[in-house]
Image (cartoon, rainbow, N blue to C red; front, side):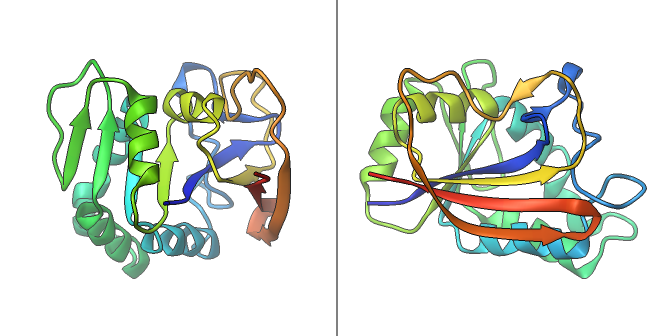
Length: 194
């Protein structure tokens, strides 16, 4: 059985996007809100250890608008070049009923997301990452997420898209890692108690 990991940058007040899907606050300590090199490396290492990435439509559109050519952007760092190459090669599944085409080693699922995630999770293989609030929320409510990675940025946005969805019952977690990055960004990683 594969492990399913939900990890994203999150505001101190619990949002992955501010109103209007604004993620300009995310990332870290750079003047352009880009993550510190250390944090970017952490996300790269997590992706390198992942066998399959699962995306909701909005996150897919954000990622696919930059990373297919991220290694060709003026001023791309060696880390960004490697991340772009890894992202293009990574097997991905996008869950959406509103788009009809995906590229870059990606498969589109338009049907029951929870059933497909459960099927993929039951297979043999390495870890899977899941991203996107709606998709992760459905997996959360179905009890499919094994690990949560929150990279908390010290900013308050007052509303927007929450990291956690409403649940029908409690989910007990074990803290397995904490780490502080430049600019006061804190990573916390939790495993679901089963």
